[in-house]
Image 1 (cartoon, rainbow, N blue to C red):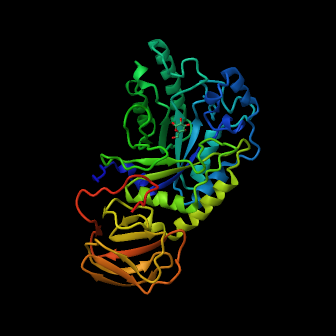
Image 2 (image 1 turned 45 degrees about the horizontal axis):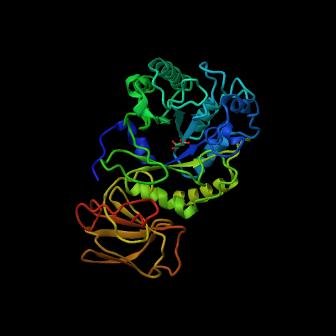
Image 3 (image 1 turned 180 degrees about the vertical axis):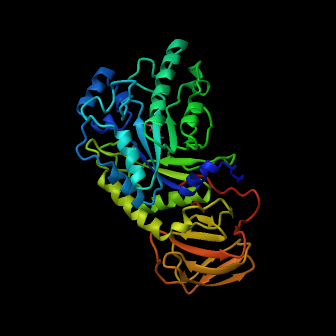
Length: 413
Ligand code: GLC
């Protein structure tokens, strides 16, 4: 894997590893996902009526931010506007927004404040498709004037988001589909130049028709082949926006494994929650995140601030991460009293169980490492992490050019 380039403003993001994605808007009322308007063919006039029903009683973004923090997440990304076009802030560009309808609330303001109060970085998701703007669904549009009108409208909205809420840390665009038919691309419109001028140091994703700072594999985990920064975004239950029947919950073990798999390959995980129409994050999401968070707290140094190292596939038991001169071996299949790994081409100074910092007896024979006299039952769950302190750069690899990685749900070794 290639070395990352030296963008200093990316450092906090590269260290963070784990963030919360929040999909929340009018679509939470029907409760059948954020594409409901499109999927069910709801006419815009009818869909717009939802804005006069949307008045979430229990929405307290502080609670969301606290949950993210307890889950071990370092940043959040919130849907300021999804494809349905409903703006979750007091925008001057359209009345179809949460401030000028039933809720009378500026949710972006509440969100940014909650992030700041809880010490989290604030990211804003913004859809470049707008099903409620007459020129906003760019499918099949060959009318250059219409394109310009719409790009100007969206640019104005992005300007507001980058001007009215203090520091914004991430701009997370979505919906730059249909680009082949567009004659007036986002990249020609000066949109991101404006964003960077208004928000120095902001980190921008790759979904506005230019690569910008990071790639966004969706619902799968795959490192960028050219070694660029990347962040995998994943649902926790199969749906982004609140969907009453979506119960494909990922387990705590899967959440931990996903973060580990991202970390070992130099990426982040942006894990989604979809609050309901009252503004409550589903109880099962909360349970899973809290439990995962306790594990991340116990094993923090194996996660945050890790970097891509000279590590390769070594077993079926889990990912390995590198932090400083330490190699962290995560194992979900506890072997009992002895753990053996091979192809470790460096000298171990000390071995321990990370959680609790309990020293472990070990022996090295050539490239083989034997961790001995271990407890019969796994000391930590869902993964136990061994910390191996190395004299220099950890080097665990079986040969040059090895790229064992294929997808998040493979062994992730
Ligand atoms: C897709 C979907 C969208 C979701 C997003 C998350 O582009 O259109 O509903 O917000 O991916 O990555």
